[in-house]
Length: 178
Image (cartoon, rainbow, N blue to C red; front, side, top):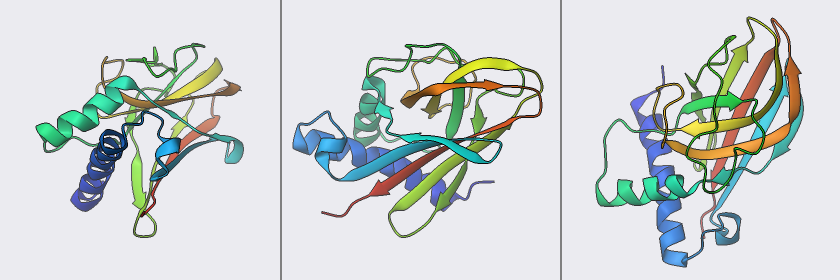
């Protein structure tokens, strides 16, 4: 189970992302140079892709709302996957996520490494074949296939999965002190 301290830290990361964006007036997370976020995709333990993610508009709004009206128990720790192309964008509210074959949205494991670095990671084990997996989402609500709680998403090269394959989604967030 994720400790309360780590849940608070992940929530604070989202809040700090919003502060940096509001203060800088910049919607491009990379351009703010205050955070480095990457997503890694592993198939059966082997890294198959590493790249940037997109913070969605509702993700930005989520951080603003957390600043104005903080909610306890709200954390960016739920991971989902999709096999629908073109659903990951700045304006996305959901990624048409899968809820079959062991790929239902699930709570990720949160690990803090270093004072300003965090991982949110989930390994899914397939119970049947699923072709064309190509998008991952990071959410603040645990309900599978629910809408308007997609903080960020990442599109990656298509992965075809068969029964007993494992796919690991790992979000890396580093807060860079300026």
